Length: 98
Image (tube, rainbow, N blue to C red; front, side):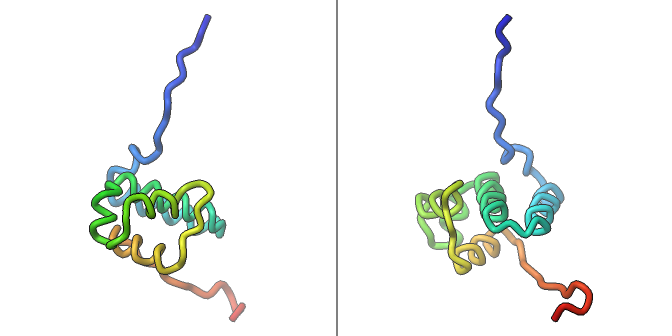
């Protein structure tokens, strides 16, 4: 018997502020820059890449390329996309490491 496989797009689950916040918090907690970039790209797709392109002044193609699996967005691109999405980044000290 053949099983039917379905394509799953995690961006469809990012349909609330709470879901996006939880998703991005988890991504940042990994400390994995590639995962963080991929997660940010998923959130941008969930919100609409055309909308994000307009808000950032970047092209859709540049955004898709930057946040693709093999992309490597600059800090400037990351920050401008986060701002367009209403996300911010904070730093906190863990113990006495500084």
